[in-house]
Length: 66
Image 1 (tube, rainbow, N blue to C red):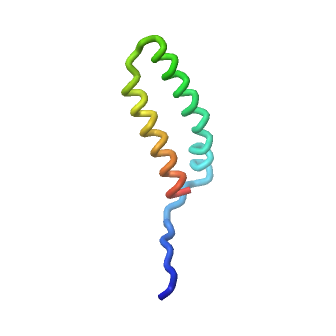
Image 2: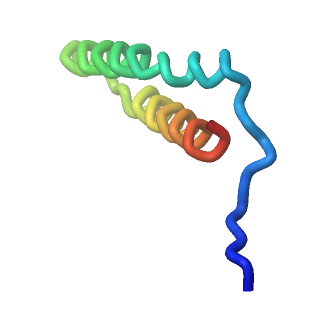
Image 3: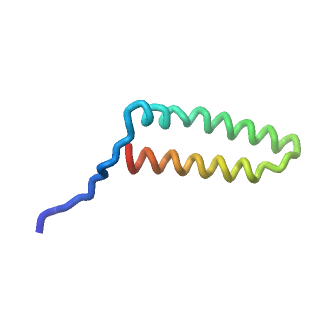
């Protein structure tokens, strides 16, 4: 039986892939901002959840469609 590997027919455009790869610095800046807000006593759970979601989406897009 032939070895069949699934290939995605969808690929990210080069500019979109580049932007997603560059987002890591934005994510790190957002983490630093959240830490500052926490030091000020603010509830940041909502922001943290959204940031985790954004990281997961970014990683998935790069992995599956990169």
